Length: 303
Picture 1 (cartoon, helix red, strand yellow):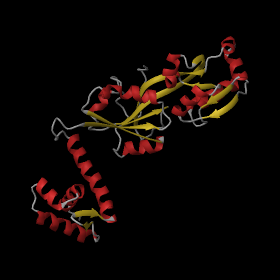
Picture 2: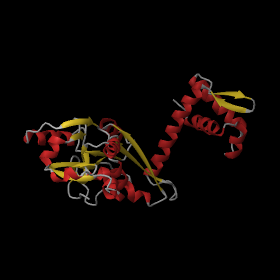
Picture 3: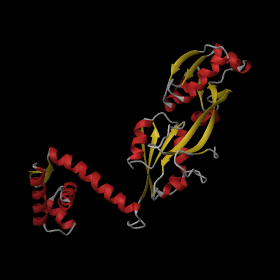
Picture 4: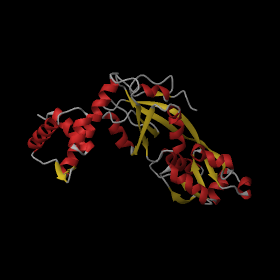
């Protein structure tokens, strides 16, 4: 079996880059360090260092071993932090997964309570919903931010906390002629920018225009809300988008909301798993009446 003492000695020397300096810094005999590293190299069957002048340089195998060692010892620190065995001054960390297409304004608003404390470290990773939920199940993330409510069953008992429910509007650059038109007339006469067909907004929009027997002139389909925000600032078309995405632009008058689309909303949620030892920082960002049963949702706190 792998000897983790050998691995830690290798990890120390790899980060110091010098055997003598590592021995002095950690008060370990230089000969002991050499013996432990040699034992690890013999066990792995690969040289981990090569000497270049007075420096020790990692070999290709050494770089691979260091990547694993970094991950292993980081997990060890996380284990101690989870059970409260680290000093009180240890930096607290919340690991957040965010849907790659999610509104940046929503993400910042969700994380704002954490930014006020300099002792708190926030790690944000973006990806697809499938990737992020997989990381949540593997304990690599504490919470996932997304739109809509994911499918849940006995094998995926997500707890969905609804953070905000935003109406969806028809938003674009200010133009005098547009103010005199009804919503149906705008949808028929103006070029339209919509989210991609996979989004819940697009599904609702397609159903709405179908009921009105309207075929809008769609000039762009964009699934990234940050990109959609930039396009609506530059393009003369009208965008089907939640106002929170272009909050700053609406406040400055760069764009205006001409109409709210009836019965069309975007649900912003935070997804967690039921855990015996949840990250205590979640209490700073999740609704106070958060759902306690797997698969349930807290639907009472739109902001």
